[in-house]
Each structure stands twice: as C-alpha cells, then as structure tokens.
Length: 417
Image 1 (cartoon, rainbow, N blue to C red):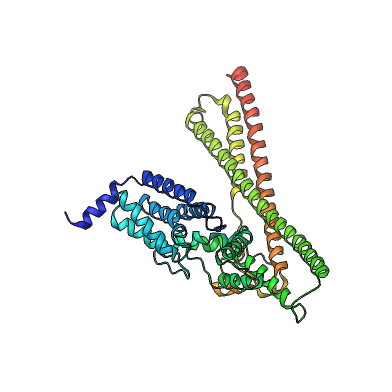
Image 2 (tube, rainbow, N blue to C red):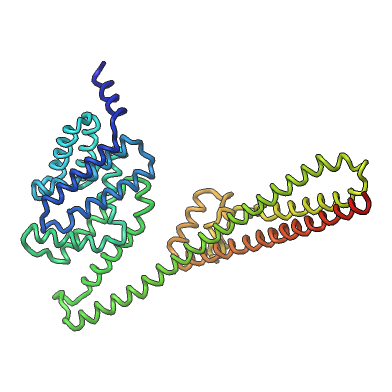
C-alpha cells in the first residue's frame, strides 16, 4: 500500500471528536500553567473567543469532521507560541508545538501539516490560501468587526506597554490601529457580510477621534477643564446619537421579522383551509353526488356544502395570491425618493447598472434609506391586512357552511328521507 493511501486511510478512521477533546485539554492546561500577567490580551480568553469564532464560521461552511478538526486545532494552538518565546515569532513556535503534540497522538502528517499551515497563516500581514486558512485568519481578528473591539484594543495597548516596558502614546497607538483596520480585509464571504459594516464603524470612530485631536491648538494641548468638558460633551453626543440609531435599527429589524412571521402564519392558515375544503369537496363529489338521483332530498344540502367550501377556497387563494408590480422604477421616482428599492417587485425588470446606481443613492442618503425601510414596513403591513381579511372571510364562510350544511342534512334526512 502506498504512503498516500495509508495517509487517506488514517484520516478516514481517525476519531476526530476524541482528538479535539485532547487538543482542548492540552492547550487549556498549557495556558493555566504558563500564565503571564503581561499578556492581558493574548491569554485563555482570547484563545477561547477565537475557537468560538472558528466554530461559527466553520459551521456556516458545513466542514466535514476532518477539516473541522484542522481549524479547531489551529485555533487552540495559534497563540501558544507566546508562552514559549514571549511573543517573538509566536506563529512558528505555536505551529511547532501543535505538530509535536499531534505527532504524539499519531495524527498523520497531512493533517498535522494543515493545522500548522493554518497557524502560520495568521502571521501579519495575513495571506491565507485555502478555505481552512481563511477561516482561522478571520477568527483570529474576528473582534475587529464586533462591539468588543474597543475593549480589546485597550487591552492590546496595555499588553504592549508591559512587554516593551515603556508607555505607548495613545495617538501613536490609535494611528497604528487605524492603519490595521484600513489595510485588513476578511477573507471568507461569511465574515465579510457579518463583520465588515461594524469594522467600518469602528474605523470611523477612531478617525473621528484622530480628527478631533488634530483640530486642537498648535501645541496639541487643551486645558484640563476644557478637555474634561469636551470629553463629557463628546461622550454625551455619541451616546445620544448612537442609542437612537441602534434603537431605530432594532425597531426595523423586529418589525420586519414580525411581519415575515405573520405572513408565514397567514400562508399556513390559508394552506390548511384549502386542504381541508379540497378534501371535503372530493369526498362529497365522490360519495354523494353520484347518488343524488336516489336521495333527491340531499340535493340542496349538498349544493350548500359544495358552494360554501368552494367559496372558502376562493378566499384562501386570494389571501395567498401574489400581487407583483411592473418591476421597474423611473429616474423621477428615484430623485423624488418615492420608490422602495428594497422590494424586488420594484426592480426585477431593471438591468443591474440602473439598480446599482439607485442603491448607491439609497446607501449614501440616510434619509432615503430610512424612508425606504419605512415604506417597506408599510407595504408589508398593507399586504398582511389584505391576507388576514381574506382569511377571516374564508374561515367565517367555512364555519357557517359547516353549521348550516349539517343542519340542512339533518332536516332533509329526518323530514324528507
């Protein structure tokens, strides 16, 4: 048997779950026994957050057991080099440590090599090649696009001061962080969609602080009282601005989600009504209609039942029948901000270039964007109102049809049978 076949066979029969548990236990024990107060950021908390992020991204891409083990092992070992060389060339040292441990666990060279390469890929500037390397790299800098970025950045600065043994000026550190955010890019499409907007927001906050400092007096200093007052005012403005903005976004998100759930509920109710009435119509036609010549007293109740069921089905169909607009918008509508580009019915007949230009205007104009969201919520509400009106009619007709038809069958059978 060739070495390649042996390697593939080892991959197949390997118990990746048990190996993952051993990797986790080994690294956690290593982090506990090599604690260093200087590492305020590169510690067990950071490692566990990277492992969590790797799991989140990997689950999105539905990795098989082998690839999942590779990225999770790389996540656990990626910063262990800090424990050995005080941070110098820690990626290579972490890869060596991972390779040695995996060799002890009889992991094949191919798998071990993939783990080591994923760790090496996290070295700045990141240049991952494979999907597995991209996942680990994105997880390592996952916090750049999260709300925890500011706190993590402060810990990084304090850690650097402790390791260097000297103070790092806030302005210099901020400049380096801005350069990092501007040059960094997430490598997986999932991370780009999930994190890019928040990363840009974090960057804009830093740029604003930098601009405010540059607008100070030529000496770069301001009186302490003024600084405190300015800081409080700035914080107050940020809080007043950020909280409503986040509240508005949450409101739109909740409203859209609730409308979608109500629409799904209406569609399910209509489906139930159509199915039940279809069954009743089929049974009545199959069992009763063919015998009406011999049981003429049941003609009227049967027609009442069939007519009511058919009417209920019609209203249920009306509730689910889609109403699609013409699929295009005019430049005048765009300039007047009277078109909702978030609804497919307004652009499905447009070419991509016109739609792209329209969306650029929406994204560059916050008032237009919020107006589009409001119009979208209102449109969903109008559609929901029509759906539930038709559904109410359908259920009402069905209810009275059953009552009246059963009563009619009973009277016909008892008095005219």
